[in-house]
Image 1 (cartoon, rainbow, N blue to C red):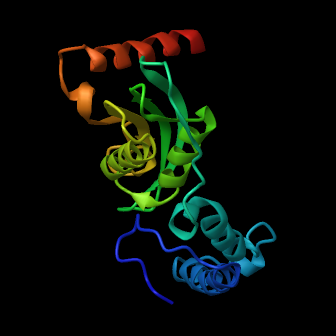
Image 2: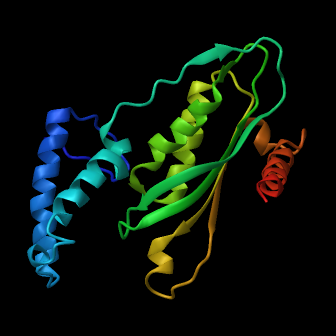
Length: 213
């Protein structure tokens, strides 16, 4: 089996390969628990934990590493020339340094032209979910979401992505602080102050935050 050279890489796996991964990973996680001093087999709440953990990783937590990209249907844009913004898309990822959760939200925007492609609203969520379910740095996650939106919304005038997330590797270890990390990736019109596109994007986030209460 080919191995990923980077934690946030992607090699689509067959169902048979995934089943094999689960079996092998469960064995190693059992050894991991034993090495930490847990007699997991003696605890009725933990005796199936190695298999549960392996299935959770393969089927959900790192599914973005193991599956094909989502099908993103695009539509020709004929008249709309404003900004398309979607905010507070849930982000559930994994820190590649400590393999602990990253949880927060992504805010995305792009500016179509009258000859560019637009995507359905749910597809932006799918892109964030697909990229998010991998071990990685938040900086990489942000840039990869930007790049995929930029690719799918062909002919756009600019793409902006902001991710705001809490890292459990900081709130559960070390100094135990409860901070939120923000990262941005922008291109095109969002890099220029000429049309104040970035300012408009940030105002959308602020406005939608108020609507959420």
